[in-house]
Image 1: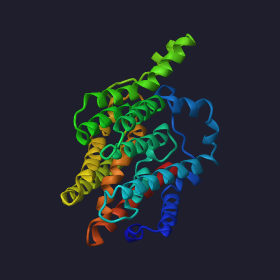
Image 2: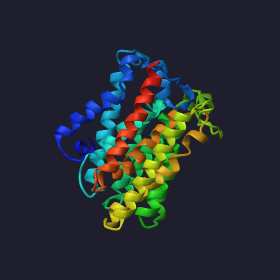
Image 3: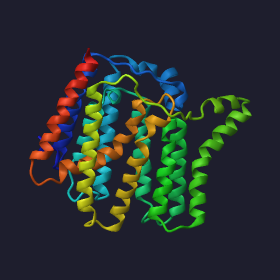
Image 4: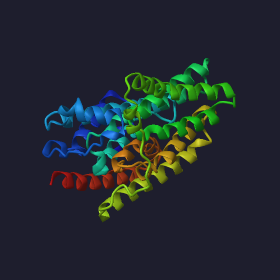
Length: 327
């Protein structure tokens, strides 16, 4: 089955659409609602007050499927354009779609799944830093995007650490460039605070600050959840192993892009443990770097056995998640 997604053709997109609908079949059987906390950013507030109609059982499944399909294909096209794989295919998009279906908390429309579009957008800007003719402009736009994403969904504040590391790795140290990046990050916050101050509503700003709290994202877990998390971790380790085997053959720019992606997955993994009310839904932000690395596992093995076994095992886990969500 995996060979269908290793070719770069228009027909593969149709297979991705069919796979997406199949692995999320529960959406058409039983619409599962997700508790959204208003204090996690503009996206959650908007979903609660202005776009609540998208939770209509008829509209929500199609909205969710459209979002993850666009994100999966956009991420895959980006990785192919940056030549981060030795051969072009749709294995990263395959990984993205499978990951959204393995964990039940990632299988519904949440602010985190929408915020993934910001994460992809930030990585696009980071990939331009190495050859940027006007790096300060790129850095300011990157910071501006990070600041906006933080206001839209608070756990994306973790992207500040990602872009700071990427700047340290990709560019030689120039103090003015660091100031430009920080100015870009602070600009949306400054404009937001100024508007609230002029409107005499500063209490809204304090109420919308991210709430950090060490906690377990889920208290009532079962053995299946541990199996699913362990499986994702195992696939990530395999993906990193295949990446390390290919890394020495890559040019320096591609290696730096992979380094930024690696830091992204390391920094994002603790998100559900440090944000109050984040839950496993906030870990949806990890799907993007996870998909990039797990895509190696489906692409590079010379024999079909390992990729097909991983695919079939993922389908088993997805069937269980669909069964749980459809009850």
